[in-house]
Amino acid sequence: MQVTNDLSRSRRVFEQDSTLIAVIELSLSNWLVAGLVPGLDRHPLKKLGADQDALLQLIERWRDEAVKTGRTITRIVVAFEAGRDGFWLARWLKARGIEAFVIHSTSIAVPREHRLRAILLERGFVAPQGKRKLEQFLSVLMDEQNGAGLSPRMVLLVEDARAQWVELDRRITAFDTEFVRWAKENEQARRLTTIPGFGAIVASAFVAAVGRAESFDRGRDLAAWLGLVPRQFTTGGKPKLLGISKRGNKYLRKQLIHGARAALPHIAERDTPLGRWAKELMSRTHRNIVVVALANKLTRIAWAVLQRGKPFDAKAVSVAA
View 1 (cartoon, rainbow, N blue to C red):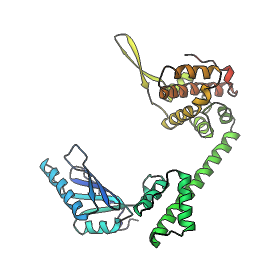
View 2 (cartoon, one colour):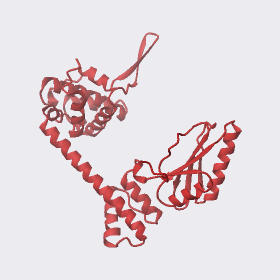
View 3 (tube, rainbow, N blue to C red):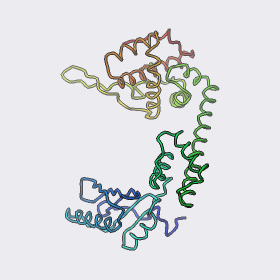
View 4 (cartoon, rainbow, N blue to C red):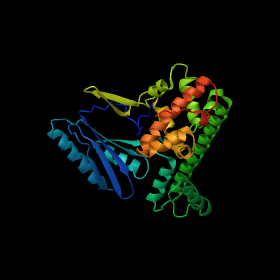
């Protein structure tokens, strides 16, 4: 059931032609304000000092701009993330007839370590880059120094964000372990992991998407279904190859390309048909093109592995140009 004073959501539908929307990114000394103003093609973006009166003046100016285009503004909505100055600013805006919505930080897709760095930076603590270095920094600050320089409330906030980060890491590790276990137990996935660039995640996603690949008569059909083949444009009877079509399973295509990128150096230094093909292609075209071409090639190899029921054999692969 919705709470009447819930500041995180609206029970009214936004009418885009009559609603002015401002989104604020709050920090210690500056507020970055982005607007959706009816009647304006551009999306205005303004950096302000941490001043509520300047914010109010900016909103009024945007409303005047909307009125000049012939729009009638019947509603003004402001949204920002919960955190520094969030709730008092919401109350201040509501007292002046402006709807304000405070968004909980955990509902925004931002890596936990970035959130922790932002919280600490607002309080004057510059955390080092890198996940492990941040863990060491927090261990010293929170465990050895007991949050020295932070208020009791901020200590609780940092510890809560830190606990969420640790729990998320634990869950990711558990899922990775489950993927590896399943890939070892499943016959098709176990064969696929013998192909360079096919780890447990790629193999499990591949099997989940295509099974034994019995629906495809050729490996090229499977690569085309995944959007890894070039689009073709013909004019004046002359065909021209364009970029890949990017059709089909976007997630699997992305994983195959990531796998190909990781495996390319290892493949190129091997004296095998696939290695010689990759090395020759790298000598005459851009590396990113080679990565996508390799993902296409590995997809065809995966089709053959599933169809023949045999593991990958690097020396037995026949590679056409």
